[in-house]
Length: 125
Figure (cartoon, rainbow, N blue to C red):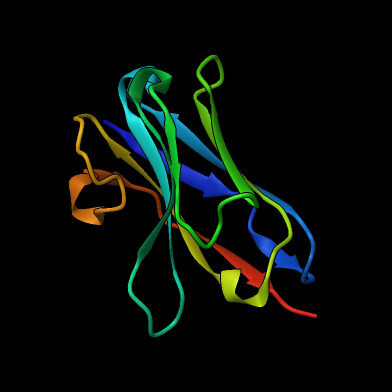
């Protein structure tokens, strides 16, 4: 059974950095597109970043470009979201998601069939 577990969230000051990890079990990591989404209180879930299957490119939301990066370690079955220059508006629950088919719009949450439970990121002084 495909299973994703996020970790690495916490409280960080504005301008700081965090690295989120997503541990994947039950599947070959390279065969899946893996993405990070986030949801702030009272807001819709939004796509943050995606790495396509077989490393066929990465995608980022405009509001995180240049600050966030996404990568995978297939040997360890881990996906990372490196977040730098964090802002209070980055505060949200961050979710890892997986998709085993190609879809042109990576940010559509409905296209992902597997989700983790989420990890809280709070950016505050």
